[in-house]
Length: 257
Image 1 (cartoon, rainbow, N blue to C red):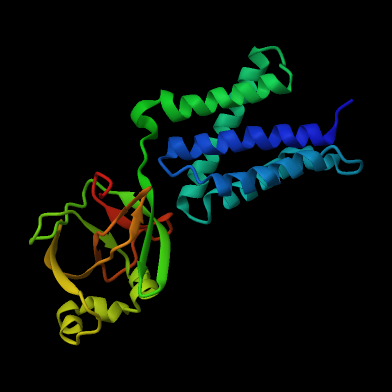
Image 2: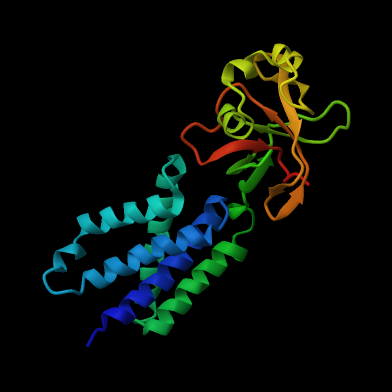
């Protein structure tokens, strides 16, 4: 006899481990909270498939629908969600192949196989799963913004006074955190002359194929980058960064701090 609660717990644990492995392979933070919510949906779906009158949910169409919903919960609504959803599907298929190779193991064997896949993703693939995005939290005057920052080796912007790496955030972050508009960011010298906020300054930049210019920048004490608390200098671009992607900010090739 197959017990729905056992199947749901099994699917939750397996999906949770595979979602963590997916984020690792794609270079994103683990995001265990979102992974747990997505795995919870997968567990409910697996239990529903066993309920009388709901057997139709087991066909491929409904499987793809719930896979898409799980990807939306775990990865968000951005371009990386489809890519990470595909990785999750490949890992799920790999787990199925391992299970067949082991001769249809019991629940413990399936969980151990999923844990083995997660360990391979986490520790066994070297630079393949090197983290390309890091979580960042910026705060100013009682407001806080959480986002992902892309580790961009092409971002070599540095403070000409100290030589330290400068982080670059998009116009949407500037509006949410500082209340600055795109027009104010597009005219940094004039905006600075108005004295809108203490500590605001200019940082020169150069972009490939484009003339150089100035960006408004502000030091933000108490910022959290990854797991480290620091006080980075953040410059604000006059346009959004990572349109359609998960990130809204750029660091250099190394995590600041």
